[in-house]
Amino acid sequence: MTSRISFKTALLAAAACAALPLAATSPALAQSAADFYKSATVNVLIATAAGSGYDFEGRLVARHIAKHLPGSPRTVPQNMPGAGGIRVANTVYNTAPQDGSNLALVMNSAAMMQAIGGQGVQYDATKFQWVGSLSPAVDSMGVWHTENVKTIDDAKKKTIAAAATGKGANSSYIPETMNELLGTKFKVITGYSGSPDMNTAMERGEVGARGTSWASWVTTRMDWIQNGQFVMIMYAGPKPKDMPAGVPSMAELVKNPDDIQVMNVVFSGAEFGRPFTFGPGVPKDRVQMMREAFLAMTKDAEFLGEAQKLKVDIDPVKGEAMQALAAKVVATPPHLAARAKALVE
Image (tube, rainbow, N blue to C red; front, side, top):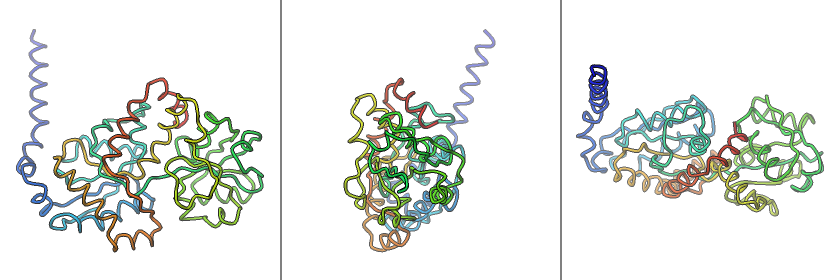
């Protein structure tokens, strides 16, 4: 009897402690969205280290979004790498103040990681309040010209070494998923340090293929695609405007209903792009104001000019669309999520 009373008392004490931060911020939460942002500092929490593509986009947004919020509040980009990008998602969901002052750029795999039971996930992606992303993040797969492979059917007939950094990276899961769902014969070779290393390996003849984001080709070696040195054979996600004619999408190639669901989980990041989100407790009017500011920013001439210089494609994905996508991904049946997990982990 004594132990039960002590346990109940401990629970009440813990609940009281947990409520303290909310109580402390209650005057701020009572403000209108406009009044709040006139005096707020907005932290833009970035899931990766400085110098990455996520970092470029996070800082680009941090430089321009304040112009479209009341009072042009101060914005402070903060890199929070760790746990494969999960650290920042856990932080904005669980411990960051839920007042609209912490806008997180999370990894586009956040919903997928929850669906497959990824290690370290301490959030519910369906309860994030998604704000928007600058564009989808289309995945792609291509083959070096010396392999004489032009189509998916060609890639089913011969074993081709595909460069990858490590298990879980798109350079690994793209060819692995194609092998599983399409019957291609890519042999994934891991251990490369990054894009330059993988490109050099193709030039040297160590490997004959590589999967990565389409944006990576646009910003680095689009000349290879234009002159026929690198042959694109598949993309996953919305079709980019500069994708060569005749390249099929993964969605066109996968026919089995269960396989389609596995594909949708693995490649869900393409639809999310590089997504900005709020935690679950941010007042709805502040979420709506930030969503509107985000879209207004993507139409601003000064912002578009800098995005063009950085080679950042602008084709915004709305927060409402990402909200629906997160729900769809998380609802994947467990046996199919397990198949997806085997491909990405």
